[in-house]
Length: 165
Image (cartoon, rainbow, N blue to C red; front, side):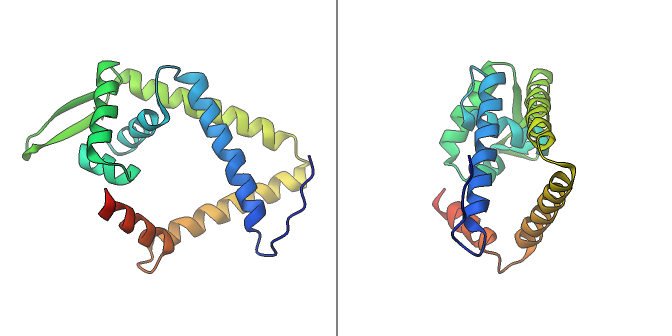
């Protein structure tokens, strides 16, 4: 399917890539975690990446209501994917850490995603593939730099979401 991009700033092309990436992310989660919702998997991902972590931080990272995160994490505990314990420094907080099965599940999804992305990138000619990889690296770097900037549109959007959580 060939698409013609209307906007000279590239946002239509970027949105098309974003939709394709979301489709890959969704399908790999669905294929590997038939009993989890996307929210539950996202919570598991945050815990695996930032362990040990509090429920509150997971809620902030996902921009979700704390009660929604508590329900998602309780389900993950029931499935033996997460472990939770009171924070010894603040008994009002609950610390979360991944169980071995939780880490294995995230690793399995990541392997599947890498396989799918490698298949897609493998369909490109070598020059286009190299340009695409360079563009991905530049884009990720720009997003990371934007997150560190106090005037960042991403940071302002997250702060607004945090106030509403």
